[in-house]
Picture (cartoon, rainbow, N blue to C red):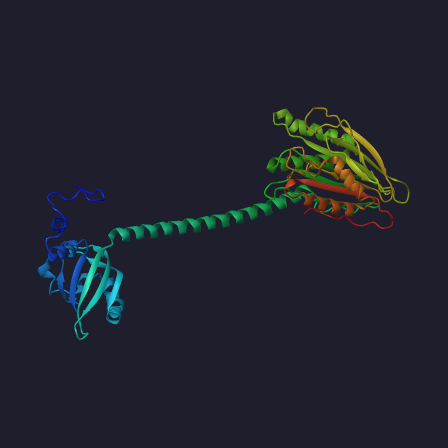
Length: 440
């Protein structure tokens, strides 16, 4: 026979009365047995804390005998030293004031050592006249909860320690990066001039942009006097980044300086550099190369025109801004990367700068700046010429200032080092301004 909900009725029942009797038989035999065998500890104390009654569950947890506890111990005798202190300062006063407490965490002492974490609830029983008679206490084993809380606390401390270590590591890394950036900045300044010299009859300006502050750049430039009233200048870009590029840059600069003093012909200077790089690197199976434009300028002053002779090894063409408002490239066709072949082809060119004309040299970080998401979305030489044509006529410092703003506008699209060098004849040759726009 089944109930309406499909649950079988206990066997031998004959209706609701039989069912109640069957379920009653499944309960504890007596209230006393339920008290003694409850899944939690029970005890009752007099108002002074003397234990008047305690169940078997709590006695078993503590390893105590009933005869040694009832009437002989107080509730505080079951507590640890810390628990006793808390009982006297908080538990007992609050219980007297409120008449009940719930879920108080305490530690009980086990016979033979050890402690039992528990949660204690207590209520005061009052008489008919409102006088307090006794205290009833329930005790729940909190060992698993305490272990869980301890594990949580341990994990939290580990997480806090790991966070503190991560913060310290990040701080140290930032400090290391700052020191590295400072060291690289010092080394970078050693690879390019701290300042440009004043050139009689010319104005000059320069700008250097480093794409990665934690890496040495590979672009270089220089301006220095040679025989007579002539001045040599060069600008270029070595392959690679980092220490290897720095070593190549240093070798390139000093080789060109020495070559210019030995023979100020631009093509001869680049030929010497090609021979040195090829012998130093390519012959040893570790080819290194650079692009470079080298020039000699003879300021005319009041006695004639300013003549510029250029030689290029695979470098982008120089750009001339004319005083009449035009802008034109100065082609140097046929030039090849310097250092690749034993005898590298070198392109040459010659131009005359009149009052108000400005010659601009740049590295490919400018023309290869990305202006869109595609691989071919590069700024390019045509855009550069159009931009500079909009500036002409312009003095070197004005050109470099405008180009610096252009570089800043590329944002993340400017992902390569960029060097800019401008030489110009003042529109008023009596006003020769010093070099501007030094490396930043």
